[in-house]
Image 1 (cartoon, rainbow over the protein chains, first blue to last red):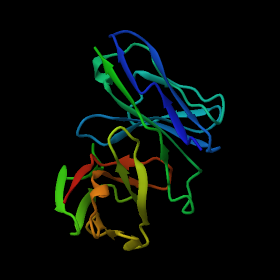
Image 2 (spheres, one colour; image 1 turned 180 degrees about the horizontal axis):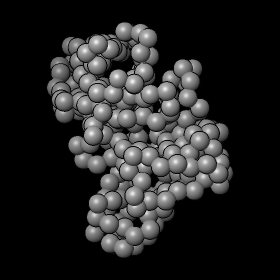
Image 3 (cartoon, each protein chain N blue to C red; image 1 turned 30 degrees about the horizontal axis):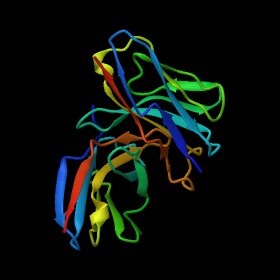
Amino acid sequence: NAGVTQTPKFRILKIGQSMTLQCTQDMNHNYMYWYRQDPGMGLKLIYYSVGAGITDKGEVPNGYNVSRSTTEDFPLRLELAAPSQTSVYFCASSYPPGRQSNYGYTFGSGTRLTVV
Amino acid sequence: DQQVKQNSPSLSVQEGRISILNCDYTNSMFDYFLWYKKYPAEGPTFLISISSIKDKNEDGRFTVFLNKSAKHLSLHIVPSQPGDSAVYFCAASTDDYKLSFGAGTTVTVRA
């Protein structure tokens, strides 16, 4: 049972380059999320999706794009990398909210991105 | 603005003693609170949660207390074990599904 799988684990980008962070889950979760964690800060929501074909902005969406063509996959796209995007990125998934689910997000192990 | 605050970036505790982690929030609309635990190079994992209709929830060695009037919650770990050394994040949500996280508290359990 893989859970949430993120690739790559590490990446160094040059300013202006583009890349896609991959996220796949095998739990048939409808809800998926992308967070970033900066040093000394909590996780901040970038984008989220409540199902295939439906995405919406979170707290810090600028500089990113997402798509959700299948239930399993939720890739995050950086079009023009900037040093401010140096961070650790976490993908997560969950069942629809409800007290039974306890809002129990399942997180991937993260992608550490450095933009130089 | 940081709606969920963990003002203690670190905590050191002796094995077998109690660890108390604190969390404050500013949004009175939050009605569900969670604690996540994170080891290095891993994603956060769900630890324990509490609904705003309760003031205490217990799961084994972990107990979460909620004081709504003070907008404060705490996590108690008794007894602390070496495997509890990790970063602990407090999180909160309104009636949607998006979590707001605190900055985390690094717990070190000394032998």
